[in-house]
Image (cartoon, rainbow, N blue to C red; front, side, top):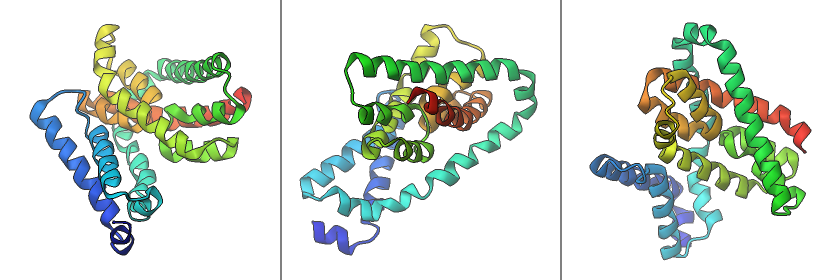
Length: 227
């Protein structure tokens, strides 16, 4: 199987896309939040690699082309924000307060947990980018001296979990203001959460898109203090 993956340049991409399509089909059929397309695609891809005894590095040679789309996909999230620009200016104080508090709580929580579980410096800084998008998180982790592969896994887990529980949490705490919903989702669970925010509404999606970029920048700047 390793030879097959090596000789077929796009087999990694094909498996990843087919797995995601299967997850998307299951979600539409059952309409259960736990059935998340990205989560399903991760599980299916892992099972395929284990069954075929395929090494991750060999799989990644083909699947790496998907990662090239991360940055342009993140930039495209600026479109819904542009469409809601007037709303953003009207609520700028609340938006700034929400972003700053969200990033601060994330970093403080990481620091407290690192102290409680006696993590090494490398392990601690690996978790700092957990709530920012992969495009920013990888660079930040490398700069801080963390473990990039673990950072990617943590970011994905944070995003998938946020995508699944975003709506139930908002309902639990009776958060009904669209701007507040978007800022909360985007600040805590980046692009994957933003996908859920866009499903909830246009305003939520726009504010969540803004949060991805600003929260990422604030995390990079604040990491100087927290490291």
